[in-house]
Length: 431
View 1 (cartoon, one colour):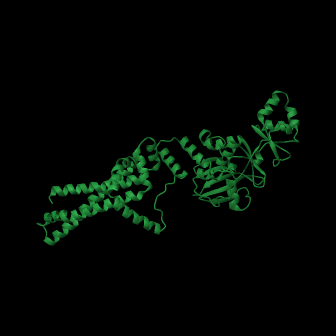
View 2 (cartoon, rainbow, N blue to C red):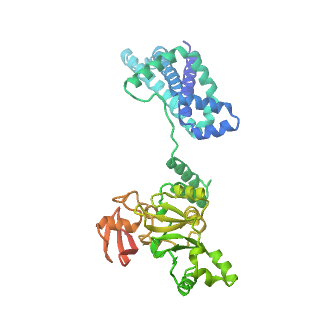
View 3 (tube, rainbow, N blue to C red):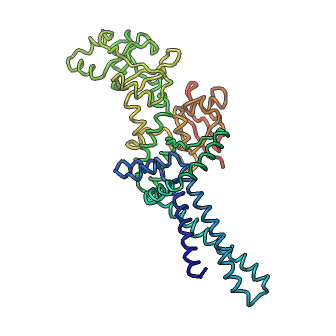
């Protein structure tokens, strides 16, 4: 073989091997979400790629046939031509036996380096830069190769599927897109400057609707303002003046005997008509009995669905014993969704004192504490919902002031407690 023919053959083999290498990476790394977007824009090749990815055995078989066939031909070329060229080149300087070894080793090294560099590494790195666009360009030639090599593909693919089934292994890949995957994409978009910080927070909060319980946003029973049927006018006026709200519970004698609620706008109308005193004296005739009651086991997403079904924006939260644990409004859920975006500094439950310490309200949801402190896991998760619950779970009793617990590289110390209720904690990073 002449040197010119040898060079052309070598270049052709490298190009063929590079095609199979770049095809393998492009078809494997291309993301289904991006392909679906391209398909919706009318790109038919994207649909072909998705169909091929559902049965990856076909193109993997073609790739392996092509790569191995080229490797064998490259070895033959190395042994038959390049070996002789190198041997003849060094023969005037060394003994014939040594020249033979130099030719054999040299041809092996040269062919190996050329194929690794130009037929494998560089094509694969190029394909990884934008796999979807590369896949669009190589899909038609790859489908042609699959059709031409169909008999071999059927044989090798059939044998591979048989062995996988015997080993009880899946023969097809199933892509599952999880909330973690989407969050990772959003984080990457924020780092690249595609998403603003507020948009990233909003998306993260949407996913947290499934993980946060309704009790994390409700007003706890100790803070709920309610009227009783036997309440006097002066007491009710003082409650309205001291703690104005949009809605007030109406109870028989205590908060666990809820009858309904009364809307502040109805009271305002009565005040405007000088009829407020009659409402108070006959409050059982004016309150709204259509009260939404939801269990405290619902997450925010489920609670939002209940608000939508009932067409209400106010609900009483009860536990499994039928006792009232608090009240929640639709606005509470919206605030949980939008609060960190619209009101980043209002009513903060976690206040950062310095780089190593935080003041935290006892009712702060444990997920918010973990997120703020970048804690992966705390002991006993699932047995409590708030940071106060974490302290009680860790100590196995109601803590006293100044008692502390160390966990996950932090020290959790009770700094304020009110009649068995943990009001505030100091969290410090351990050195």
